[in-house]
Length: 68
Image 1 (cartoon, rainbow, N blue to C red):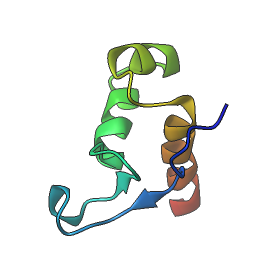
Image 2 (image 1 turned 90 degrees about the vertical axis):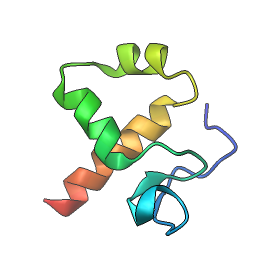
Image 3 (image 1 turned 30 degrees about the horizontal axis):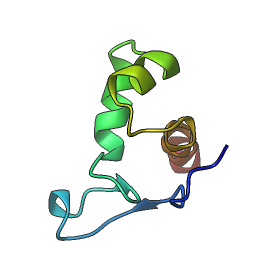
Image 4 (image 1 turned 135 degrees about the horizontal axis):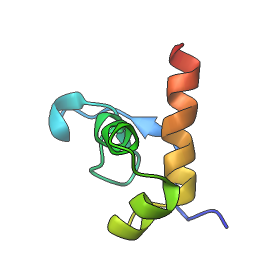
C-alpha cells in the first residue's frame, strides 16, 4: 500500500542544509543508508522509525542504484 506522500527524494535548503531527503520527512538519504550499513534490515528500520515506510526504504535503495 502506497502512502499519500510521493516517494521521491528531494533537496531543500531549509531542511538539513539541502541534503537529499525523503519527501515529506526529515530523514536524509545518508541517514537511511547508514542504518542499512550498520546491519539493520527493512523490518528493523521500519520498527525503529515508524514514520518511514517500505516504499521510503525502496526509494533510497533505488537512488543508490541510479548513482552507480
